[in-house]
Length: 253
Length: 240
Image (tube, rainbow over all chains, first blue to last red):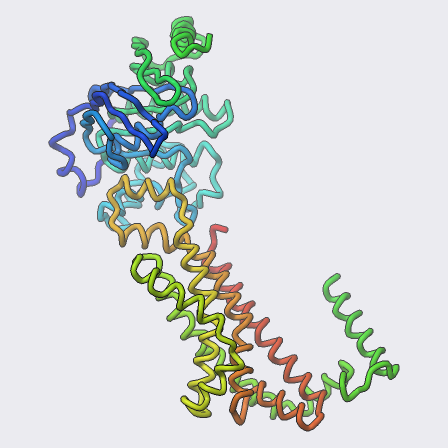
């Protein structure tokens, strides 16, 4: 099933680079004396989901902000088509309804309020949000807030999605449900995805490839292919083995 | 319930103190005397209340307009912030009783000096709270809007302005509570009507029950204005 997610207003602007992937070559970034990233090279092919895993404070969020153009690298080369950010905490605006939050990127792109709502509304049933169109974020559960935030990111109509620990703040049960749900949503709406997480298992369940970063300043210590079909089960021996392999590369096991 | 009981107990204690002759009735009238003064002088006090109410409302309106413009201006422009912040803060160091007579000399006995003094007292909480509210925006939300390539105006309209509303209402409520101070000082400096004027003449005639009745009306005015803004806040800021 294919659904339309691009707003007509933003389509032409990004069309030329739609099939390009994300490339980082020797990228470094420091905040004053604190070096967040040192010499990071990675690439994500079009429609590939790449998980970036590393310990807390290894510059994962900085990496996404670089890809989204919110920061400029101090050194190295970065190429990316326009990217949409899903910040660590959902970043929903508390005074907007779920529908208006989901359509926020469209509003900023100049789409009228009515059209933005109509575009967001088409997805509410698929996203398990039917009936909550008018609800304020404070009236939604944590899992629903993340789904609204993800829909907002998707509706930005950009070829690259940068997801910053999308399920980090959720309880284990909701997280497991949403991981399954996200895998399904990405199968329906393939995009180039950079998924930052500190959860190795989440990376194995969702990504085509896993990039492992060292503690600060972050640099790539290993890359793992995940050649498994979806849906993946966390009890699958191949999933377990990849998870242990990744933990080993991070020096945990 | 408990609050009502405390008020009633306080009033009863006050009444007993005065009736028992512990304090001179000329200095402190009993609540029942204040209440009867309120009733007997209702025509006089009513027209004074209308005068003061007008001064306070027009002054508050001016304070909100000027205060909001200053708060937004200081937020948007560094030059405006640097130029005006010392003036805005310094304006609150000016003693109202001292400049009130000067304003009357310059602007006459009419409405203008009263409105100006009310506005001078009230614009500060509006400006400072709005300014702080505009600055205290969730950094994640700011990043998000930047990642959508939002313009400065879109960030203001979609993010900063709504985010600052609760703080702006705090400013309005503080302004409402202190607004009558400006009106009373202005009336004391020169006027022929208003609750401040009534207070002054009643004091001069040793009509302490009427002075207390006028004070009670000032008190009620401030509480009502505060309540009106609090009510408006509940209707506007629904996400809190």
